[in-house]
Image (cartoon, rainbow, N blue to C red):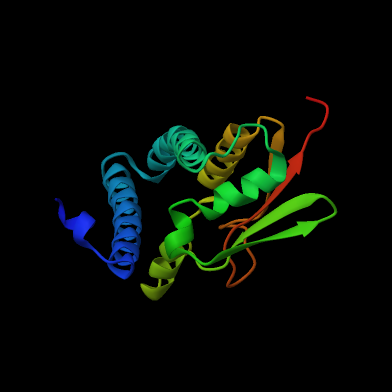
Length: 170
């Protein structure tokens, strides 16, 4: 029997949160290493490519693990977004407006860490656009994604916001 099989529900939830924080810390360490070796522009390009791949993998695994069907529309996307690793460590919420799904990151651990250190927000808009678009299209190829705001173009004190719409003509 491994250690996780012996844990209580509370201990397992604590472990999940720790794993999510470790995952995000690894992503940050990887990015900083790429930036040191290749510069910011190249690191963002590499990060964008990595997130395009990872977002699809994460979406497929969420769908498989939780029995979420492909092509389930915006309701399915809303559920899948809540099951991402981010959901364990970043406060987030979604809203419905005129048939569109709006998704907001209320607290972003990456940007919070930068702000605590007195650094400017990480310009994550190009990476986020690919990440959220890929994740949404993997859930349902009819979903279109638009950035509402994202650093460096987010309002003061805010993080990213995304709009998802369903294209009924596909």
